[in-house]
Image (cartoon, rainbow, N blue to C red; front, side, top):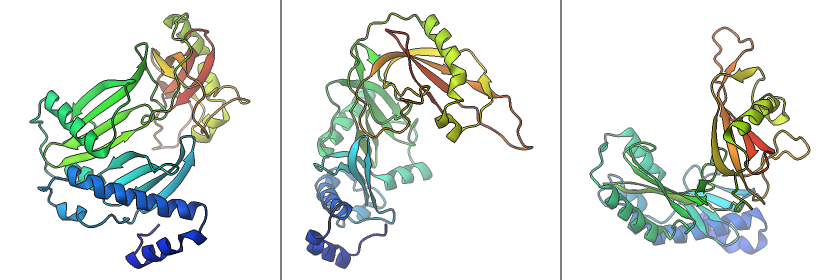
Length: 318
Protein backbone atom coordinates (compact mmCIF):
# COMPACT_ATOMS: atom_id res chain seq x y z
CA UNK A 1 0.00 0.00 0.00
CA UNK A 2 1.42 3.40 -1.02
CA UNK A 3 1.59 6.37 1.37
CA UNK A 4 -1.52 8.50 1.48
CA UNK A 5 -1.22 12.06 0.23
CA UNK A 6 -2.76 14.79 2.43
CA UNK A 7 -5.54 15.31 -0.16
CA UNK A 8 -6.31 11.60 -0.43
CA UNK A 9 -6.36 11.24 3.33
CA UNK A 10 -8.72 14.22 3.69
CA UNK A 11 -11.11 12.77 1.10
CA UNK A 12 -10.93 9.41 2.84
CA UNK A 13 -11.79 10.91 6.22
CA UNK A 14 -14.72 12.87 4.78
CA UNK A 15 -16.04 9.88 2.88
CA UNK A 16 -15.65 7.26 5.62
CA UNK A 17 -19.41 6.70 6.30
CA UNK A 18 -19.88 5.14 2.84
CA UNK A 19 -17.03 2.67 3.43
CA UNK A 20 -17.38 -0.55 5.35
CA UNK A 21 -15.27 -3.38 6.70
CA UNK A 22 -11.51 -3.24 6.25
CA UNK A 23 -11.48 0.25 4.71
CA UNK A 24 -13.03 1.71 7.85
CA UNK A 25 -10.62 -0.29 9.98
CA UNK A 26 -7.62 1.13 8.12
CA UNK A 27 -8.80 4.72 8.41
CA UNK A 28 -9.58 4.34 12.11
CA UNK A 29 -6.32 2.51 12.78
CA UNK A 30 -4.31 5.23 11.02
CA UNK A 31 -6.03 7.96 13.02
CA UNK A 32 -5.42 6.18 16.32
CA UNK A 33 -1.77 5.55 15.39
CA UNK A 34 -1.30 9.20 14.43
CA UNK A 35 -2.76 10.36 17.74
CA UNK A 36 -0.57 7.95 19.65
CA UNK A 37 2.55 9.02 17.72
CA UNK A 38 1.92 12.71 18.41
CA UNK A 39 1.59 11.94 22.12
CA UNK A 40 4.66 9.72 22.62
CA UNK A 41 7.18 10.90 20.02
CA UNK A 42 8.63 13.83 22.05
CA UNK A 43 9.59 11.47 24.85
CA UNK A 44 11.12 8.81 22.61
CA UNK A 45 13.32 10.67 20.10
CA UNK A 46 16.64 12.14 21.18
CA UNK A 47 17.38 15.64 19.88
CA UNK A 48 20.98 14.64 19.08
CA UNK A 49 19.86 11.97 16.61
CA UNK A 50 21.35 12.96 13.21
CA UNK A 51 17.95 12.67 11.54
CA UNK A 52 15.84 14.05 14.40
CA UNK A 53 13.91 16.33 12.02
CA UNK A 54 12.45 13.22 10.37
CA UNK A 55 10.12 12.79 13.35
CA UNK A 56 8.94 16.39 13.73
CA UNK A 57 6.25 16.35 11.04
CA UNK A 58 2.83 14.75 11.54
CA UNK A 59 2.59 10.97 11.37
CA UNK A 60 2.62 9.73 7.78
CA UNK A 61 2.76 6.33 6.12
CA UNK A 62 6.03 5.12 4.61
CA UNK A 63 6.28 3.06 1.43
CA UNK A 64 5.60 -0.06 3.53
CA UNK A 65 2.13 1.29 4.35
CA UNK A 66 -0.15 -0.60 6.71
CA UNK A 67 -1.76 -4.02 7.04
CA UNK A 68 -4.82 -5.35 8.82
CA UNK A 69 -4.40 -8.82 10.32
CA UNK A 70 -7.02 -11.22 11.62
CA UNK A 71 -5.47 -14.24 13.29
CA UNK A 72 -5.69 -16.16 16.53
CA UNK A 73 -4.56 -13.09 18.46
CA UNK A 74 -7.55 -11.12 17.20
CA UNK A 75 -7.88 -8.33 14.66
CA UNK A 76 -5.05 -5.83 14.64
CA UNK A 77 -3.28 -3.34 12.41
CA UNK A 78 0.38 -2.63 11.79
CA UNK A 79 0.88 0.96 10.65
CA UNK A 80 4.33 1.90 9.36
CA UNK A 81 5.17 5.58 9.59
CA UNK A 82 8.05 7.33 11.35
CA UNK A 83 7.36 4.65 13.97
CA UNK A 84 5.95 1.21 13.29
CA UNK A 85 2.84 0.94 15.47
CA UNK A 86 0.70 -2.16 16.02
CA UNK A 87 -2.68 -1.83 17.70
CA UNK A 88 -5.80 -3.81 18.40
CA UNK A 89 -8.42 -2.72 15.87
CA UNK A 90 -11.33 -3.37 18.23
CA UNK A 91 -10.27 -1.04 21.04
CA UNK A 92 -7.22 0.86 19.77
CA UNK A 93 -4.84 -0.61 22.37
CA UNK A 94 -1.23 -0.26 21.23
CA UNK A 95 0.84 -3.39 21.89
CA UNK A 96 3.93 -2.72 19.79
CA UNK A 97 5.83 0.43 18.82
CA UNK A 98 9.23 0.58 17.16
CA UNK A 99 11.67 3.09 15.70
CA UNK A 100 12.95 0.95 12.81
CA UNK A 101 14.96 3.81 11.30
CA UNK A 102 16.96 4.08 14.53
CA UNK A 103 17.58 0.32 14.68
CA UNK A 104 18.89 0.39 11.11
CA UNK A 105 21.09 3.42 11.85
CA UNK A 106 22.84 1.96 14.91
CA UNK A 107 23.37 -1.34 13.11
CA UNK A 108 24.92 0.12 9.95
CA UNK A 109 26.93 3.02 11.40
CA UNK A 110 29.83 3.40 13.78
CA UNK A 111 27.92 3.66 17.04
CA UNK A 112 29.05 2.98 20.61
CA UNK A 113 29.54 -0.77 21.13
CA UNK A 114 30.53 -0.72 24.82
CA UNK A 115 27.86 0.17 27.39
CA UNK A 116 28.30 3.16 29.69
CA UNK A 117 25.16 2.50 31.74
CA UNK A 118 25.09 0.17 34.70
CA UNK A 119 22.43 -2.53 34.74
CA UNK A 120 20.51 -0.50 37.35
CA UNK A 121 20.61 2.58 35.11
CA UNK A 122 19.43 0.55 32.12
CA UNK A 123 16.47 -0.79 34.09
CA UNK A 124 15.58 2.75 35.22
CA UNK A 125 15.71 3.98 31.61
CA UNK A 126 13.50 1.11 30.49
CA UNK A 127 10.86 2.09 33.05
CA UNK A 128 11.09 5.72 31.89
CA UNK A 129 10.30 4.64 28.34
CA UNK A 130 7.47 2.40 29.58
CA UNK A 131 5.84 5.44 31.16
CA UNK A 132 6.02 7.27 27.84
CA UNK A 133 4.67 4.46 25.63
CA UNK A 134 2.01 3.50 28.18
CA UNK A 135 3.01 -0.15 28.37
CA UNK A 136 4.44 -2.23 31.17
CA UNK A 137 4.85 -5.95 31.89
CA UNK A 138 1.96 -7.54 33.79
CA UNK A 139 2.56 -8.64 37.36
CA UNK A 140 2.73 -12.26 36.20
CA UNK A 141 6.00 -11.49 34.42
CA UNK A 142 9.48 -11.02 35.84
CA UNK A 143 12.68 -9.65 34.33
CA UNK A 144 14.44 -12.60 32.68
CA UNK A 145 17.10 -11.04 30.45
CA UNK A 146 19.25 -7.92 30.19
CA UNK A 147 21.76 -7.61 27.37
CA UNK A 148 23.73 -4.98 25.47
CA UNK A 149 24.89 -5.25 21.84
CA UNK A 150 23.82 -8.87 21.76
CA UNK A 151 20.38 -9.23 20.20
CA UNK A 152 20.40 -5.71 18.74
CA UNK A 153 23.48 -3.69 17.74
CA UNK A 154 24.51 -0.98 20.22
CA UNK A 155 21.28 -1.36 22.16
CA UNK A 156 20.10 -2.55 25.54
CA UNK A 157 17.40 -5.23 25.45
CA UNK A 158 15.32 -6.05 28.53
CA UNK A 159 12.91 -8.98 28.48
CA UNK A 160 10.17 -9.92 30.96
CA UNK A 161 8.55 -13.35 30.88
CA UNK A 162 5.77 -15.03 32.86
CA UNK A 163 6.28 -18.13 34.97
CA UNK A 164 3.88 -20.56 36.62
CA UNK A 165 5.17 -22.07 39.86
CA UNK A 166 8.66 -21.28 38.61
CA UNK A 167 8.20 -22.81 35.15
CA UNK A 168 8.71 -20.64 32.06
CA UNK A 169 6.46 -20.66 28.99
CA UNK A 170 7.59 -22.23 25.74
CA UNK A 171 8.62 -19.57 23.18
CA UNK A 172 9.81 -21.82 20.36
CA UNK A 173 7.03 -21.16 17.85
CA UNK A 174 5.87 -17.64 18.71
CA UNK A 175 8.67 -15.93 20.66
CA UNK A 176 6.86 -12.60 21.11
CA UNK A 177 3.61 -13.97 22.52
CA UNK A 178 4.63 -14.50 26.12
CA UNK A 179 7.22 -11.75 26.47
CA UNK A 180 7.39 -8.05 27.21
CA UNK A 181 10.44 -6.50 25.52
CA UNK A 182 11.93 -3.04 25.46
CA UNK A 183 15.04 -1.91 23.58
CA UNK A 184 16.93 1.39 23.47
CA UNK A 185 20.27 3.02 22.66
CA UNK A 186 22.06 4.94 25.39
CA UNK A 187 22.74 8.00 23.23
CA UNK A 188 19.92 8.04 20.69
CA UNK A 189 17.05 6.73 22.75
CA UNK A 190 14.10 4.41 22.30
CA UNK A 191 14.18 1.58 19.73
CA UNK A 192 11.08 -0.53 20.41
CA UNK A 193 8.66 -1.96 22.94
CA UNK A 194 6.21 -4.81 22.44
CA UNK A 195 4.01 -7.04 24.55
CA UNK A 196 1.66 -9.98 24.26
CA UNK A 197 0.14 -12.11 27.00
CA UNK A 198 -2.63 -14.43 25.93
CA UNK A 199 -1.86 -17.96 27.12
CA UNK A 200 -3.80 -19.49 30.03
CA UNK A 201 -2.22 -21.21 33.03
CA UNK A 202 -1.93 -25.01 33.07
CA UNK A 203 -4.38 -26.83 35.32
CA UNK A 204 -1.52 -28.57 37.11
CA UNK A 205 2.22 -28.23 37.45
CA UNK A 206 2.71 -31.60 39.13
CA UNK A 207 5.55 -33.57 37.51
CA UNK A 208 4.90 -37.31 37.50
CA UNK A 209 6.92 -38.27 34.41
CA UNK A 210 10.69 -38.48 34.76
CA UNK A 211 13.02 -36.79 32.32
CA UNK A 212 14.36 -40.16 31.19
CA UNK A 213 10.86 -41.53 30.55
CA UNK A 214 9.95 -38.41 28.57
CA UNK A 215 13.04 -38.75 26.37
CA UNK A 216 12.27 -42.43 25.71
CA UNK A 217 8.70 -41.65 24.66
CA UNK A 218 9.78 -38.65 22.56
CA UNK A 219 12.38 -40.77 20.77
CA UNK A 220 9.62 -43.08 19.56
CA UNK A 221 7.54 -40.11 18.38
CA UNK A 222 10.43 -38.44 16.54
CA UNK A 223 10.01 -40.33 13.20
CA UNK A 224 6.28 -39.56 13.16
CA UNK A 225 6.94 -35.84 12.82
CA UNK A 226 8.43 -36.36 9.36
CA UNK A 227 5.28 -38.19 8.23
CA UNK A 228 2.91 -35.38 9.22
CA UNK A 229 1.39 -33.35 6.37
CA UNK A 230 2.57 -30.12 7.99
CA UNK A 231 6.17 -31.26 8.05
CA UNK A 232 6.01 -32.48 4.43
CA UNK A 233 4.84 -29.03 3.35
CA UNK A 234 8.02 -27.50 4.74
CA UNK A 235 10.79 -30.08 4.79
CA UNK A 236 12.17 -33.25 3.21
CA UNK A 237 11.97 -36.59 5.00
CA UNK A 238 15.17 -38.49 5.70
CA UNK A 239 16.59 -36.80 8.80
CA UNK A 240 17.78 -38.87 11.75
CA UNK A 241 18.84 -37.97 15.30
CA UNK A 242 22.44 -36.77 15.38
CA UNK A 243 23.05 -36.08 19.07
CA UNK A 244 21.86 -36.56 22.61
CA UNK A 245 18.36 -35.12 23.10
CA UNK A 246 17.80 -32.33 25.60
CA UNK A 247 14.68 -32.02 27.74
CA UNK A 248 13.31 -29.01 29.59
CA UNK A 249 10.16 -28.46 31.62
CA UNK A 250 8.11 -25.66 30.02
CA UNK A 251 4.49 -24.55 29.92
CA UNK A 252 3.34 -25.14 26.33
CA UNK A 253 0.22 -25.16 24.18
CA UNK A 254 -0.73 -28.57 22.75
CA UNK A 255 -0.85 -28.66 18.94
CA UNK A 256 -1.43 -32.42 18.52
CA UNK A 257 0.81 -32.38 15.44
CA UNK A 258 1.05 -36.17 15.28
CA UNK A 259 -2.74 -36.64 15.24
CA UNK A 260 -4.16 -35.58 11.84
CA UNK A 261 -7.68 -35.32 13.28
CA UNK A 262 -6.72 -32.79 15.94
CA UNK A 263 -3.53 -31.22 14.61
CA UNK A 264 -3.23 -27.43 14.88
CA UNK A 265 -0.62 -25.89 12.63
CA UNK A 266 -1.83 -22.30 12.30
CA UNK A 267 -4.10 -21.16 15.12
CA UNK A 268 -7.27 -19.17 14.44
CA UNK A 269 -7.96 -18.29 18.08
CA UNK A 270 -6.03 -18.03 21.35
CA UNK A 271 -5.11 -21.39 22.90
CA UNK A 272 -7.71 -22.72 25.32
CA UNK A 273 -5.26 -24.69 27.43
CA UNK A 274 -1.63 -25.14 28.32
CA UNK A 275 0.24 -28.08 29.78
CA UNK A 276 3.44 -28.36 31.75
CA UNK A 277 5.53 -30.42 29.35
CA UNK A 278 8.86 -32.04 28.98
CA UNK A 279 9.97 -30.35 25.76
CA UNK A 280 12.46 -32.78 24.23
CA UNK A 281 14.72 -31.38 21.50
CA UNK A 282 16.55 -33.50 18.91
CA UNK A 283 19.29 -32.32 16.57
CA UNK A 284 19.34 -34.09 13.21
CA UNK A 285 21.42 -35.01 10.18
CA UNK A 286 20.21 -35.73 6.62
CA UNK A 287 20.60 -39.27 5.29
CA UNK A 288 19.03 -38.82 1.85
CA UNK A 289 20.60 -37.88 -1.45
CA UNK A 290 21.42 -34.30 -2.39
CA UNK A 291 22.39 -32.63 -5.64
CA UNK A 292 26.02 -31.55 -6.11
CA UNK A 293 26.59 -28.32 -4.19
CA UNK A 294 23.22 -28.56 -2.41
CA UNK A 295 23.35 -27.86 1.32
CA UNK A 296 20.47 -28.75 3.62
CA UNK A 297 20.25 -27.17 7.06
CA UNK A 298 19.17 -29.97 9.42
CA UNK A 299 16.11 -29.05 11.48
CA UNK A 300 15.76 -29.25 15.24
CA UNK A 301 12.79 -31.43 16.21
CA UNK A 302 10.79 -30.90 19.39
CA UNK A 303 8.37 -33.33 21.02
CA UNK A 304 6.06 -32.19 23.84
CA UNK A 305 5.33 -34.75 26.59
CA UNK A 306 2.75 -33.89 29.27
CA UNK A 307 4.74 -33.96 32.51
CA UNK A 308 1.77 -35.22 34.52
CA UNK A 309 0.26 -37.85 32.19
CA UNK A 310 3.06 -38.78 29.76
CA UNK A 311 0.80 -38.00 26.80
CA UNK A 312 2.40 -36.75 23.57
CA UNK A 313 0.58 -33.44 23.15
CA UNK A 314 2.51 -31.89 20.27
CA UNK A 315 5.63 -31.43 18.21
CA UNK A 316 7.53 -28.73 16.37
CA UNK A 317 10.50 -28.29 14.08
CA UNK A 318 12.69 -25.52 12.72
